[in-house]
Image 1: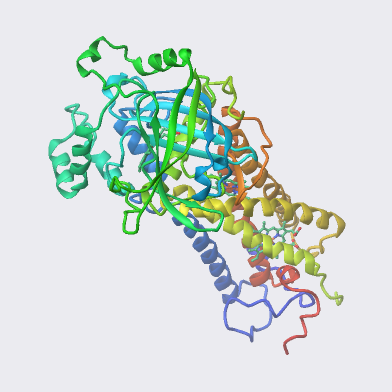
Image 2 (image 1 turned 90 degrees about the vertical axis):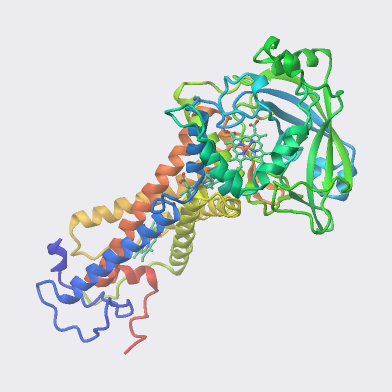
Length: 387
Length: 185
Ligand code: HEM
Ligand code: HEM
Ligand code: HEM
């Protein structure tokens, strides 16, 4: 390096407008030896580089291991799942793909300018699943079921949505949800969660009680076909005038509700939900009504652990028609990230922090499972993702 | 050597500084959004995609401009290895400026994502849906971003070395046009 430090400065190309590192305009004659000014300049350069590199590392979260990032959230889910099930989703791991379409009746246009609500049909790729992170969990052991949808709009826009069979979220912030997972984690020595940790958590989070009380009365049905699926988070529908409407939605089954006979669970297959779905679809398509509810002033918008009162105005905006089921192993839903923040023009996220967290956490889960698929040389899904 | 030093043309300088700001912003936005679980994730990604595509368009113009105009020669006393470093890092910077947005666009295509620019405006898929392709491109997008950041740091170190230590006019050739020498004094 000293070679260049000693390099003579060429006065003809020297530009005085380039700020020297330090206020020393009367630099003495050039010498053939590093001058204090050059050493100071070198240190300054080093400092600048170090500062930029450190800011980069900070923004990336590398300097703050306690910060909750998408990657750390997924690590935590994996711990709670009791391991990594390669190629599977880190939550809602066990599921089945379906294809169908959404028949809009045009009523949604008053709430949102999204073209999916203009009267007409939109093709849909979807997925029914149970909520567990372990894909080998028997269907009867999981109280939460889900429906995920990817509406493929005519102009190439996409609307993705993930809905649960429980009406609201157990906890309203991602940080608390993360802590909840930590409190429920099985102690490797006992194989059971630590009761003291669970109690401490419950004592500081009264919303847990609201959830478990609601769950006690929530009907668990005997089929995907007659489960109600709730969007849970609040979204903003933007109408043609640009007015924003805070909404939540549900997919309400047209199939008659039949409660699950818990006594009969032993006799049911571990996969009874997908078997039942297949049998029903052999008879004909299944229908769900998309019901959109608008908030009234004062309703909680950014807290998905608080339901809205039952009397809010609700609009039936169209009907989902589920036509055909396809095993997820090579079905069109397999390589789709049902990130609920993939929205068409006319639908926007609310400032619900759970909703925001879902966006980045699902992407991290998606990245991991597709990497595992690639490592296992899994070919593209037979039916393809893009219709 | 009494001839005034050559400078980059105003258009080249404009492109250089505009894109330097954009690319640096993209690198920070990229690592920041991926780590964030707040609404910053969605806000930043909505900026990241169109800004990245804007870089793709600008780099095409910039490449054409670079091929049309010779770059000012480096000082004749610069050691050979430093010339080679300067050349190599410039080639690498061009390659990465071109590759990064193309990878971003094709990885979203391979991952079955819509490629949203703003509002209803979106780009078509430029790669088939494929888990292997997605996994490869998604990781390439991360690692090449780190390479780009490293080469940027090297490039910056070089520029500051010229500007603060050698004071040989190389930094000035990109900072301003000729004829500013007499501004002061
Ligand atoms: C902070 C809270 C939450 C976290 C960390 C979380 C995490 C996850 C993860 C990692 C996946 C797998 C994604 C993939 O690999 O594609 C998933 C799937 C899913 N989640 Fe959540 N989730 C949260 C809240 C919710 C809420 C509030 C709902 C309610 C509607 C929900 C509904 C779903 C559904 C329906 C799926 C399945 C999507 C599919 O079939 O691909 N999640 N969740
Ligand atoms: C000069 C151009 C670009 C640069 C420097 C850049 C840089 C980055 C960086 C540093 C990351 C974070 C990687 C990680 O930590 O894993 C990232 C992620 C990403 N980039 Fe880019 N990018 C560029 C162009 C694009 C373009 C054109 C698109 C799409 C049209 C795109 C889409 C994405 C997406 C989707 C992610 C991942 C987001 C997530 O997983 O949550 N990028 N980019
Ligand atoms: C990500 C950011 C940057 C990129 C991608 C970049 C890229 C380039 C490229 C490709 C060139 C060759 C000239 C051309 O074809 O335009 C160049 C030249 C130059 N850049 Fe940068 N640059 C960046 C940031 C910077 C910064 C921050 C500085 C100074 C503080 C700087 C200083 C210079 C100088 C002095 C030259 C002229 C070098 C010569 O003629 O050999 N650049 N840059």
